[in-house]
Image (cartoon, rainbow, N blue to C red):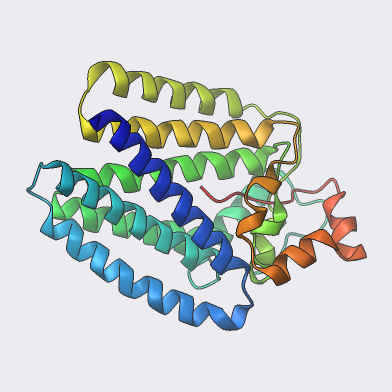
Length: 266
């Protein structure tokens, strides 16, 4: 019963939070200040929860700590994709940009966000709340893996989930049938799930394994030759759905271009 409850808790919390972020990101930019203000207030409560439940090993405390870690991570994603905490680079690369220089430009477009994540991870670490810490760090690492894979090239790039205000991110990603990193990412996630299921037990281990399994599924969806973006299109705002359903001629031209396209939200 506890195992089933842990799996359901993680799946529901991840699914609902992902859909909410997709929806808020797809709203007009004029709504972003209100969304970020509300999210920042919630993150404040999340940090209080991280501190409050730090020495409690009960199922309730573990669940609340996990939820707090996920909430804090979701705030960093909103801060990135709404354009509040990004990086010093704001423009797409010129045509023909590739190699180490192109990767350096991609890092520059996300640098402040990555430093923010490191700072928040350190803040959670100081509280000694291990559940919140591993939740936050796992989400970060899975996000990095997914973004690196999309940068190197995947089948499904789902550009409609990146707000127009962060168009710069679309220029650092690529559509390909496979890349060299993908098998290692898959192997790492499978290995992590195996270790969590065979070396550990209890509510916390089951939550961690479930989160890793979600990350594994997200990576698989990146490479499936199917219109995967339709799975979460229902979570977009009506205006954004219309833009996706009836793209402009320019959007269509960019979508079929052989230049890196788009990222993913983990």
